[in-house]
Image (tube, rainbow over all chains, first blue to last red; front, side, top):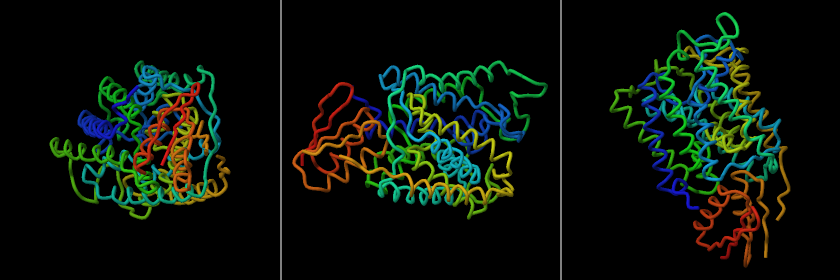
Length: 359
Length: 68
């Protein structure tokens, strides 16, 4: 069965569509330069269910739910739903924690880094440079034989756990379920968590992106990795289309404000913007996908990706509870230390997880 | 005839393994994968290296037969 979206034209079309939807989500109420941010949005979900109590970032983001369910439904239709898992789950869970820590020190995942750039935020340049550096380090490990081992076929029911968990979150959102006075479920009354597009718009956009990204194998980390690793420009052409489309829509909607200072939900600590994303990029390479890709894979039944995503959600809770996540004022008390710890962890994983390649 | 078993390996492992072998001498290289993503990625690699590939189904798996 031919898959148009996996072709060069296809992935460029997908990139452009996502690049149009993301600024539109912002226009409809999502936070500035955050039409889509997998890390920030998973963090908001973590807050909503009480894993942290930073009251400005608590909201169950339908976009994340849509990514998983969109991929879930389309992979069922396309017969690519394949329950699988068992490839170093503990390592992947931990990589998810550290990937989120890195992203929250920068204040964005690669998707948001690109959207920030498309919105004129110069600090995103440091973030993307750091991301690339982390990816280059990861590629060195890949070339050295790094592998977390193969995954194994699992029973169909196990592939449903993560999508059903996501659907459950959506119900909590829709019915504004309160388990205690005031929450959980928490809904930010101010700050980025209070800024959101209407639920129907967010979930629809998420489902569309989830489906298109699953078919096209869209991955913001793989885009850079493949250029470095095998001089392949397929994935990056999709990312390029995403960036160009987002830039164009931002210009049309008046959402482009160039500069470094006073950028929305951003800080100007160049060193930690760079190093935070270095950690994130390295963790994404070691885990085999950018945070968006991990969600799309999870929707397909990949439980190794699912456990990484859950690691990111837990990591977000830890980051806000332990003064690790940055704010527009700059890095937090333990942000830099946590990034260093994460880099050490990833380096140890990179050096120790090797398999003898057998033909 | 060399055979690479890339089943259960996730991106970019199948491509990394295949690329290593493509640099060596071979007549025919068989790469077994068990999903479309790996298949697509390897076919793209083969095309870039200006080699030819044929596909053969073996149960639930796909064998990519590469010739220089």
